[in-house]
Image 1 (tube, helix red, strand yellow):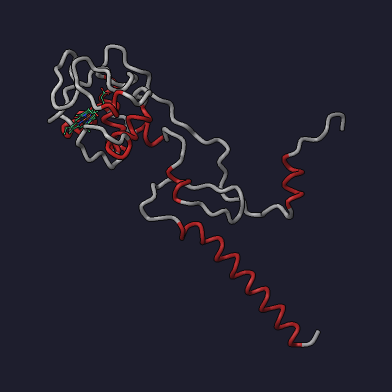
Image 2 (cartoon, rainbow, N blue to C red; image 1 turned 30 degrees about the horizontal axis):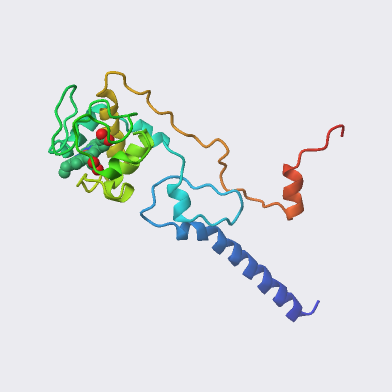
Length: 208
Ligand code: HEC
């Protein structure tokens, strides 16, 4: 091989190596700094995760369940107290009384004049709905009368929801964290071809 040919090959090898290094870094670069700090798994070597994928993790994550602390929730509830009471038999204020609200259909506390938005959701106050609502009430339920900016921190929401949960004559069971069992760290060696991948997932025909 002449020297020029060798140099060309060396250059090609170097370019490929740089390309691989770049592509491996790429998913990290694309992640926004305000994305939640959770590991992102991809099934292929260069699958690019969007920030949407990150927030779409199934609810509730283990960190959320771990943050369900009623004592902490009582502190967070101070932000709600100008409008809400939570004790058994408490009266409505600017907002409805919240005794036993977890698991109930939305907008059904007796004697409170709710917005139509709140009475016509068609859903119950599950942990997930409460979390989404309390994060940004006006965005989650357009037309709500609850004039509250929201609780930005997931751990504050988990804590205050736990506080609401226990303020009930028959508290709902605590939610179980969703753990993604299939999640694997980034696979190092990619399958050679698409055929290899298909062969891997196709069960062998019976009798072989
Ligand atoms: C400025 C007053 C105000 C503050 C502060 C406030 N809320 Fe509300 N909240 C309301 C009003 C008003 C409604 C009824 C909304 C509607 O009808 O659309 C409501 C509704 C709710 C509901 C639905 C109740 C039901 O019966 O369906 C929940 C749950 C709730 N608030 C929780 C909270 C929590 C938890 C906090 C504190 C983190 C909080 N709110 C802070 C005024 C407030």
